[in-house]
Length: 300
Image (tube, rainbow, N blue to C red; front, side, top):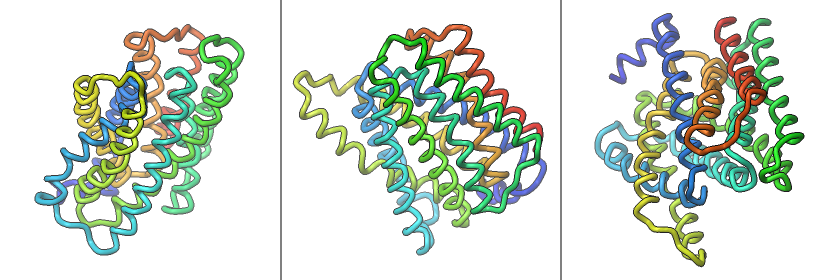
């Protein structure tokens, strides 16, 4: 399968597959965000998810895929560092703001920085129509932020901090998207990068979550956390794997922007499952973010 995927790089068929993978990643990432923001403490949920996908990835990394080339170890170190920082910021943002507030700003801010990073790292460029799509996307993002600041009453005191953390988290989304795209292109077999990424990335946050769990006066039951962890691990494999393969098959910037149609899925999930009030204006602003991503894809 690796040889087949590599043969599609830079082809029209590869571009179509990359678009489908980016859209799949959008849906799955919205599900993943809702799992982390759900009824459990986001730090504990993230630790459970990381532990589960690290355990699931271990046999593939150690015994199935080819071992990483020597130059990949320094790449994996920086991948681990960037993702660990991103997860800390994400958890801090979720503790201060509602899912439908934090998630769109995080996922919408990331593409702008990703497009800039892809220009410098991979020499990618956008057309005028694509930049107009980025502008539409940003109008939706910051329109949503302003609307939330003016209208929401839940978590009102912590809303400015939540939005600030969301923007900073979006910067790290762009950083890991761009650097991971560099990493998956630096190895001969893309599945080597994916297997070792999940194995290495799953080592840190379980320890952080365990220390937090031990310090809690009323410790939550481990069973439901582990169940959520296994489900989240499977979703993470499919979501992250899809977008990383998309960045290898086609342009990094386009894949990153198209993935941010996840804001529409996030709105539906927050309303239906997390019982958060969304409202027509916020739905319209989230749809504007998605429309900007679609314009970027059409203009490519």
